[in-house]
Amino acid sequence: MNHRLLKLNRSLQKVLMEYFIRKKKNSFPGFISVKEVSVANDMKSAKVFLSVMSEKDCSDEMSLVLEQERFFIQKTISRVLKTKFCPRLNFFINHVPYVLSSEEKNI
Image (cartoon, rainbow, N blue to C red; front, side, top):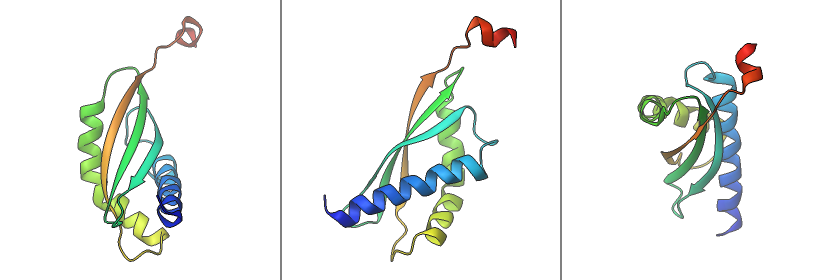
């Protein structure tokens, strides 16, 4: 993979993390982290690997919300990154179960 794609992968990951933290932290169930971003060689599509930590499996709900938000996410990316194309994002979700400990339940 060339240097330009690696740089774009890191930049996209950073922009997406900021988007999920600042803009949409209340609209998604659980905690979201962007694990990896992989941009295609033509820079027109990107795979975004997300990890969601929540008590229940909400992968289907997350997929629906991300599909609805895709346009706004790509619009945010196009404002921040100065590239010819804004890659079309394809989201892949990994659910990580979060179990409350007995101490956390008592709080």
